[in-house]
Length: 450
Image 1 (tube, rainbow, N blue to C red):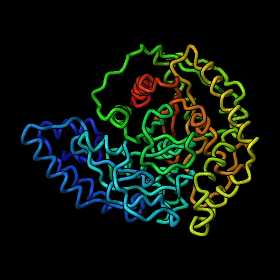
Image 2 (image 1 turned 135 degrees about the vertical axis):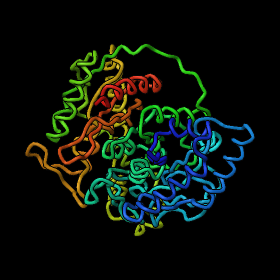
Image 3 (image 1 turned 90 degrees about the vertical axis):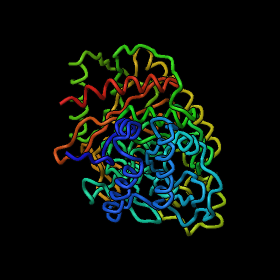
Image 4 (image 1 turned 90 degrees about the horizontal axis):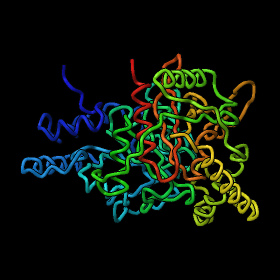
């Protein structure tokens, strides 16, 4: 049976490249062929670097021929969210309001990946300036869900998720300010990691809300997410991390988080918990104190910081923003200083509350997205007879951990009756992202059985 290389996880294709089973050129061609076939419909990419990717593939193969294999990312094609600088290409942010000049250098995270041998295959579409959850507001048009083109793949890292889920990249680098890596990962059946705040540099990344912005990977499995995370953080995947035994104990904070879920998401989540318990995991019901304040805390933080970030753009290029993004940015100008100060106080309270809730557990466990991938042009959603704005619903389970800086990862945990993916979110202690990945890898093994 012929191996379709573009559909393999990174660690498998890396072994094939290292041992000469496949050349880097063949791997790059398989990805470019998939892009040519699928991207005209799905609209995941803003730019494809086909010529430079083939040149870099030739060079990568020559290095291997002379014994200069650079490690598990050598010759592996990755995509980059078009909010992140790639030298020699514009960083469009999917907006007419962005700076059209070429980036002079790679963002630090991208430079680390290139140093490890990765090939940047292209830049990905997104919700304009990463300020949205669906990927619909984009100068390049919406990215479509690969399983149902009437639906959103989630956002704001919409193109990144679609590129990985369809074999148009082996992994992608996205950003997450309120859930923008985890939401599309859940919607598309991927692993999406938001590390501890500050672990991966945001140098060369266009900011949205600097105290909430995170850079992280979207991949097909946890092992690949760890590889990209360690490389982006350290410049190498060879770094050692302290191993802490996994107690196989998860805390499930049901109040607030589990109060409003789509029925199929709830069923998938509870089934995942049951499978983990059957495999020997302890699942304890718990609660995060003050959690009901999290939506207003997060709203005041993101609106005010985003308005400050875009103050010049709103003054000079106001009409170049899409309507939805411009409205949110302008709302941020009306957040009073005392509201922002109260939000900072609330952030501190919630941070300590999560620390306390984590005590005795390896991680907290929640769904990632309260609903399946929404239909395009949806503005509200009904959950349990309550109509809510779609944006509020999609951010409900993810945004708090941007404010507190705790690491969080989404892994697949089943499908709805119509075949749409569901995501399980694990939240770990700050500065223990590798331990969280240990937990996620064990959970992934259980949930992927059968």
